[in-house]
Image 1: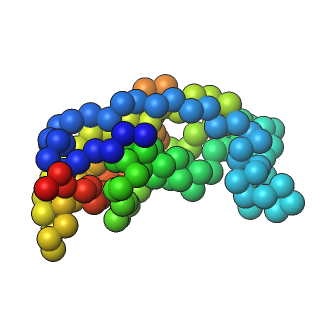
Image 2 (image 1 turned 180 degrees about the vertical axis):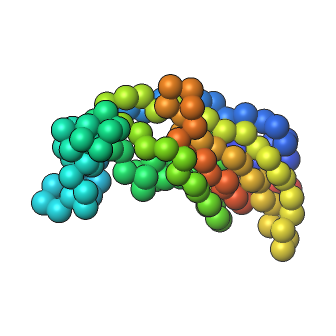
Length: 141
């Protein structure tokens, strides 16, 4: 994992897209096999009855992936300081999701070097989850 430094990041920089495929098993395992909170997270037919075409991907699973995505982008000496997310539409298990993002702000806040990114999950090219993430990066100095 590469470490990013505050001085090397610019507003407009894009993150490298990453594709993951959330499986039905991941959805079930995320909530626990003995206690799914909603049958549509573990049952393809229940998801189809809801009109989404299959088992739903939990929003918290997507949020955890986005947090890991940004953390991996920033590097081991960085720290995710804040994350705000909005779920725009449901995603269906066993279909690829692409995580992508770009830098929207760079500032010193209370003496800390902060980078703000906007990241999304994309399904079929359409955003399903949007998040703004503030990351504290180390400096070279």
